[in-house]
Amino acid sequence: MPSSPFESPPMGEHRARVLEYLRGIALPFRSVAGTIIEERGLAEADRLMLRPNLVMWACRACDGDADAIGDALPVAAAFDLFDRFMLLHDELVEEDEVTALAGERSACSVVARWGLGQSLNAGDALYAMALRVLAQDVGNAERRLRVASLVTRAVLEAIEGRTSDTERGPNGRESSGLLVRVRSVRRRSAALTGAALEAGALIANADAGVCRGFRRAGRLLAAAVNSRDPGLAARLSSKAVASIERSIPEHAHLEGFENLARHVATRAA
Image 1 (tube, rainbow, N blue to C red):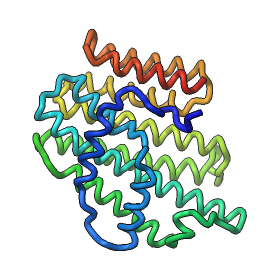
Image 2: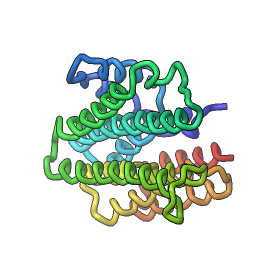
Image 3: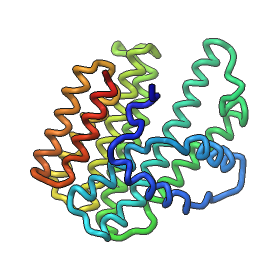
């Protein structure tokens, strides 16, 4: 059984183009941190790239022309780099928690191989690279600036979700239980997935109402992805589709999002 709800998902047609763009981004340094990024890039070559795909899909769904699609590509690539940054730092936090509890870490972990300092450097480098990509190959400067603000706010919300939900429980006490972790994952995923759809719509110059609808759809889709209840996942996915339908009724690209939402609900079963 696939390990991810997005194994071979709809919208995968955008993945090859984003990967090609990412291959053209040279690492800004030769160092241990750069080696970690390269090695993890090879190990994650089959990653699903949900949010980059959603950026590209949203731009097309909002009737973005060829110039807008070209402008969306660096944004999609930046989402991939931000996702990799978040994943690496999550691993470092979880590894630190495991070490604190058990007094040992896996021999294959990034920290065991390279040390905490170099592993943090690699994560910070991914963050900086993502910011740099957001500022390169700019088509429409005004829209790209708005997207950059939107994306970085979402990343900060995701980081804040990881920090506050991990450190403090509902009574303000320190907590790291399963429920706390689930809330953390949902909050971070919602922020980033909502921003991915909204960013694509914004690049296509969609109006504010459409951007809001896309953002809501992304947050609902993220909640469905992280739901272990098939019935709840199906309801959330349906609500995500409804939000898209209200934003762009009777559009040729609706089927792609509907297929993706159906895929999410099926995988939760």
